[in-house]
Image 1 (cartoon, rainbow, N blue to C red):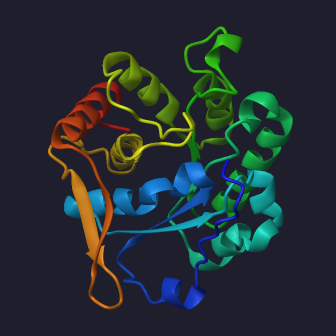
Image 2 (cartoon, rainbow, N blue to C red; image 1 turned 180 degrees about the vertical axis):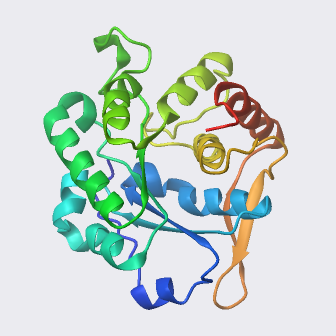
Length: 250
């Protein structure tokens, strides 16, 4: 993970002032969540189709769910869940933990899942992808992260978001489209777009076919900020593969 700590703070007064009719969602994780504005791209996709989503993130580079639980490095994830009435909360552990430190990973997934349910939210488990350092050559299943976390999701009633499976199939079909940055670990804009399509499908049940290839919004000064963009051909491939792999009724 990136060494420099990057924290996105969430201010309670902003959260409470949002439209009461919107569905509030929180992403908890690290750079595999905040790269290229993943949460806001998901929000933009959903809002484009008429879903009134209001998505926040609580993220810090290299953080684990244990870090989030104890609110290290100024993270306030547990407090946010307690105070902010999120309808859904996405949990992303450090990318190596579920496979290389399973007991700790399981412990803090379960702590957060219980905490989310206690606060009337729906928990989601974000299965990150394989990369150099946790190569799938060490495992005898196609999608080790999915294989490891699926029983936990079934036991707790959390919803599994199979990003790892979708990334693997996309790479097999379209090896010339890079879904990672030069470090071969963090997602490229196309990788984030692909992941966003998965979250869109999981959250809404709708097909991602026909979604925009880029999203933008204005800052407090009215200046346009692009959240992310991909080539149209890549966007269509991302949409089609998610539409094919994930069932519409979830």
